[in-house]
Length: 231
Image 1 (cartoon, helix red, strand yellow):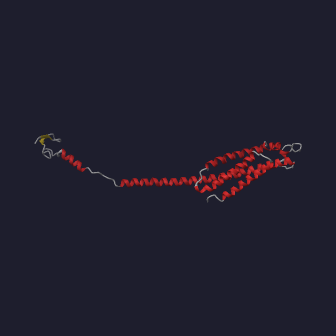
Image 2: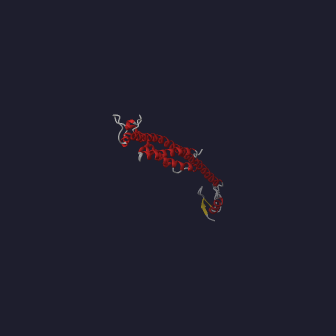
Image 3: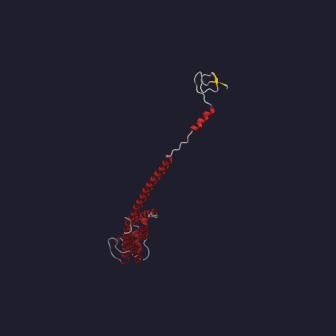
């Protein structure tokens, strides 16, 4: 037995006592304390935690799914909108190009055969009322006219707009695969019609034949694509 000082009252007491006889301070062996502490430690496992993680993952996947569906739906809606815009633009510009082609053809013809027409006389006849001797002069008069210059500028702007839209449409959704192939054909016909309107070439006969062919193709492909568009 040895004497120790009480941690509470500092009086000498036996190291064997369980409590100080003077102040009652409890004394417990250090080894026992450690044993108690060790035995009192319990590993706490939260069984609900994995479920929360799984629930969180499921929730994230659900949100991602909704966003993906919304994104795809929005993307298809925009594709459909652009698809219809490019068709309308090709038709509208094609109509303006056809008017210029018809006027060009009439100016060309009336110069050669000296036919009077109030729509073409300003290009085919001189200020004295005589027909010009060369149809190229008449065509030059037509294509340097301020109204014609505006028409050509608008056609070129349309070509740029249509070209940009076609690039945006080059990856069609599955339900637009068939109609997109027809749209490409329509675009080629549109390009042919507008190019001939801007830059007439060949003989009068070849010009008329080529322009009529391209115009018929454009109209025919428009009718065809209307039967292919998804509901």
